[in-house]
Length: 258
Image (tube, rainbow, N blue to C red; front, side, top):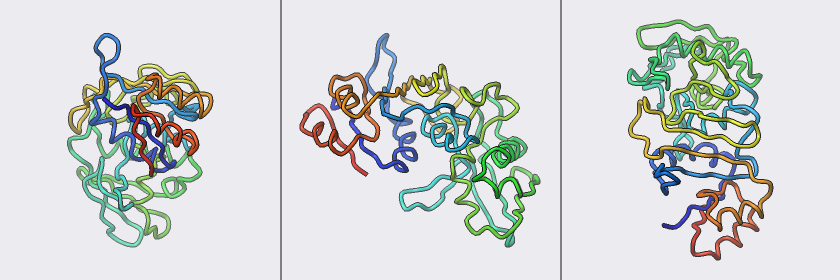
């Protein structure tokens, strides 16, 4: 099997990787466990608390948490944990939740849980001002969000990883193991070094084919290219153009550019 060697732009890398992993099921590692190994010069950050700074990009990329909506290939928002988003008035939005969605701890995703997560993001992330200033209420399996001012891009705002939904009450360590709804759960996390994730046995949106995923920080582009060529990683993230051009000469590697 050809190993996958990827060079993605930042947005594409962080947005699309999780979808690739869900259907991946790559080479079996030691003991027969299907492990996908990913390396990059910034593959692991200091925290995976989605409400912190830009850390939510990693929370979503790792497959730990998901947002109410996500962007498709045309950059249009489509439902993820939600099934519908309606603008009721200039400042009022009705977000209907997917009734199947559950957190990795088995707890159902309810409107109250979603509101708690969005409020937390609004309090902790300066980019989530719209969430901080909004008023929230519950209507059946929907949340009603009233923004302070008209916000035509509100559904797009909910695709930002800072709005990844986590079980605030059920999470004990927001930095290292937030409880989300994604296909993977954290088994170990070393800040700025390595993250190991196992498949979420309670995943609500289909089978997770990879049993384990490992992300590891690698010192520089040359070492990363060598790790891919030697089989130490299955996927090399965000290579430099020079390293990717060199790696393209190998018949063991596949280059994907976006």
